[in-house]
Image (cartoon, rainbow, N blue to C red; front, side, top):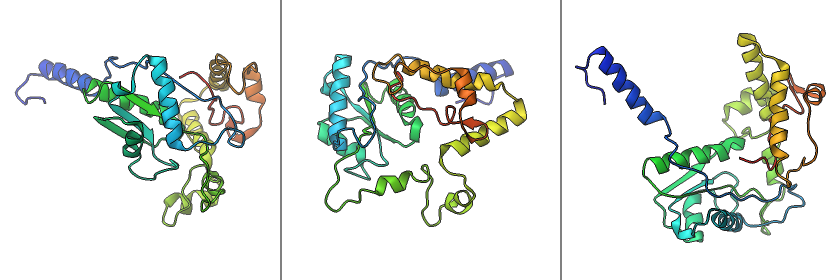
Amino acid sequence: MLRPDLNTLEKAAAYRFGMEALMGLKGHAAIVGTAQYKPEKYSTAPKMFHLEQVADLAAQALRDAGLKASDLDGLVINGPHFHEASVFVPAMAAEYLGLRLNFAEVVDLGGCTSVGMVWRAAAAIELGLCQAVLCVIPARMAPLGPDEDPGWMARSMRFGGHSTAFGAPEAEFDLPYGHMGQNTGYAMIAQRYAAHYDYDQRAMAKIAVDQRTNALANPQAMFYGQPLTIEQVLASKMVADPCTSWKSSCRWPAAPR
């Protein structure tokens, strides 16, 4: 906390120190183990309960890190679309794994969820809340019970994550005008950026090329052995100007993170 009687230089130094302490990760946390299923289509991937996937992926990551389950005292997990629970997901998963937690968190950021998990886990470790955190996203389909609707996921993904619920602003103001999915949102951001700063289309295309190159380092990547060029990106089908099919919401399965 800053004191009101400090002179200008002292104030500046104290402010800088305080902001660095509050906002800057010090690099005291590290990713020490990872695990990932081979990318597959939902229709061909084995169906597993999400708790099963959490346990299996946790075991693989722990082996990779050389740790034991008893070393874990933090858990960061996804909440939406978790098959076996819609609330208290960390509590259920922790009990299933037999973990005693000091830190538990749910992250719901769509395609950025994994990155958001890592940031929160690192912050929790640096704050002294916990020592080792499991970040896990079960993404395979779970087996459906006799009373479960097999079409629920198709309907939930139809509008690209936008809510169609009664009272949702996007259902009233966005979807009727075709603003749905991630591509239109990214296109609007790109158009706004271009209007203010301009940018080189080839430089933007190179981002997609670099993502593909990164994914090709993994033999299990869906596009393994299929490099991409800037020319291919620029010539691909337009989806939402200026985003083409190879620039739109690029998420290369199996890209190392």
